[in-house]
Amino acid sequence: MTDPTDTHTHTDTHTDSHTNSHTHTDTGKVLAIASHVVSGFVGNTTTTFVLNLLGLETGSLNTVQFSNHSGYRQLRGFRTSAAQILEIFEGLEQSGLLEGFDMLLTGYVPGEEELRAVGKIAREVKKRGGGFWLLDPVMGDQGKLYVSEGVVPVYKSLIHHADLIVPNQFETELISGVKVTSLATLSTALDTLHRMYLIPHIVITSVTFDGASKMACAGSSITSSGASRKFVVDVPIIDGFFSGTGDLFAALTLARLREHSAAAGLLSTAGWIPPDETATLDLPLAKAVEVVLGSMHLVLKKTKSTRDRILLSQAAEQGEKERHVQVTRASELRLVQSQEELLRPGLRYEATVLP
Image 1: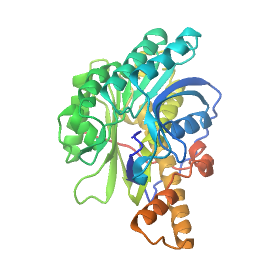
Image 2: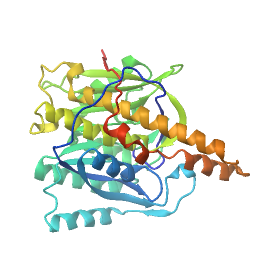
Image 3: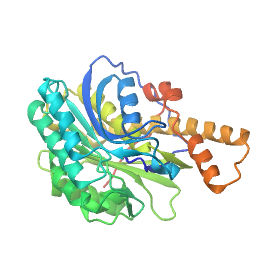
Image 4: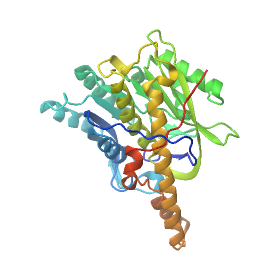
């Protein structure tokens, strides 16, 4: 997810290789509203780099300005107030700069008033240009909230305005009311989210079940009658503490979904919803997620390898605090070093139909 505290484990082994030959000739423009850090890759630091690399011009509106992400257990900086968020938006509006944005990506917003301001901006941008909105409902992980409790009902009021949401397992439970403990309840959660919010597309990330050696990523695109078209991808787990993986997933998913939706002639269709006759595994969303997970695996594999090499060559710091900072710094995502993996992953995880 897009909170500076976001940490997940990810893939360690891969399935069939696949070369993505798409060339980025069709330019789009994204308004990205999320956190920002000076050092490291989380929030808009990740989003802007990845979207630009994949051919999408990106404007960043930062909801926080921090020295580093909170995985270090120490940081300096400040939050952007609701008034400041709206003032920046009004500046864009005043200069006639809103019309170019045809996509929105929203992530970490720490407070409810700030989230209401972001929701107001998103609705206005969509009203003006019909922009596609990827909403990452960043609230927490592993049973713990890392935003104020008042943020939860605000997200529930906004989701039906979005086109794609990418909650993790805990966030899915918060917004659906379904406890996700198995593939059956994961399927029920997707059905419930479509029914409750009429959201066109859903991807539930980072799903783990007790005793499982793999992580699941499940998605669905709605039909004209409101039915789900559900798929799931299983990915092995890389052990490690990696911040910013949710931001990376969201940015890659928006870019890849746009590519596959463009190839299917859907960019002029509301919500980029494919025709009802489109088979589940032929959905642009399913194809996009397969490639996204390939890039995620390769980036994290390189990050882990680099981290292990750095830590092996460094003398351990004396104190626990210093050691934690040392490990966290070595674990920052290696995005600049992984441009080929982001552009042409050469690896794709295979989706299967989720009943």
